[in-house]
Image (cartoon, rainbow, N blue to C red; front, side, top):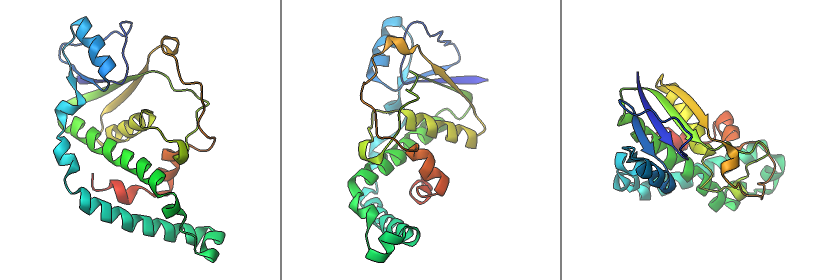
Length: 205
């Protein structure tokens, strides 16, 4: 079974098996360490066309505006105060919500191309540092460098394609994690997937 390693992080303690395996770096720091070790690898950008990613962005923008109108309709229907006072809550949080949704769409595009370029892969090994269990995610403090969304989406794509998905966490002590904590609340990605709010945005990827 052909194996693909997707490396968000990497250190020399990880027993990286090459040979028939594909090694893909997701971070410049990872690329540097792989090069020092003499490991053949590719970067994610080798496997997708950024110009193709940007094609149709104007049409996407207008489709997304329609999605926001629909989302506001949903919120007004289910939140009495918003309905009674005609409050467009989604539009009021437009930039924050757009940033989150666009991140999911872009990651979905990249992951789909990574898997298409490794169509014969039977196992995906995703390597990262452990995430702090106390972290909570808020659309008002959503950071693109947080890769937990990428890993969650990668698992979903692998399940859809019947590819074995494995996580490997490197030792937490080797990296200084940020001291600040994000706002408390449910994991935003899980919540939106559960109620189907982002399906309309992601279904065409």
